[in-house]
Length: 241
Image (cartoon, rainbow, N blue to C red; front, side, top):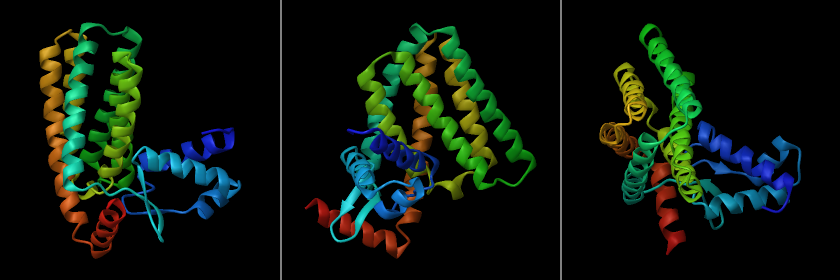
C-alpha cells in the first residue's frame, strides 16, 4: 500500500468486513467504494488487491471481487490454526500481563455482560449481534497484543477478521443462551489470566473455539442452501484451478 488514500480505502473495506456490512458472497465494487469515499478508483483497486492477497476477498474472473466464502476445509483449518496459536497466546498472557491491558479486557467482558442483559429483556436485534462480534474480535486482538509477538498479531488479526466474516451468517443461531455462553467463556478466560493459571485459560479458550467451530459449520450449511452462494462456491473452485 503506497499512498495514504489507498490505506484509507483499505481500512474502510476492512472495517466493513469486520462489521458484517460486507457479508460472505457480497461483491465489493471499485466504483461504489470510490464513490462512497469520494476518491478515484485506482487506490480502491489497490486496496482490493491487498485484501485479495490476505485471503479476505476473492477475485472471480469476469465477475469482480467478492467477500470470500470459505469452504468446509478452510473453516476447519482456520479453527485449528486459531486453537493452536491462541493457546500459546493465553499461556503467555497468564504468565505475564500488564494490569492496564487486563483492565481493557475487563471492560470488554463488562460490555459483553451488558449485551447478555439486553438480550434477556429485549428481542435480540442485529445491532446486539453486530456489537457482540466486534467485542469478540476486540477481546482476542487484545490477547494477541499481550503475547507481544508481531508475527502472531498480524497472522491472527487476519484470521479473526475471516472469523468475523463467517459470523455474519451465524446470526440466526445467536440466542440468549449462546450470548450468555460467550460472555461467560470470555470472563473465565480473563479470570484464569488474572490468576496466572494457564491451564484453565487454555481450557476455556478451547471451549470457546470449539463452540465457534460448530456455529460456523451450522451457518455454512445454511448458507449453502442458497443457490446463489452455491454458484459462487463453484465459480471460486474454477478460479482456483
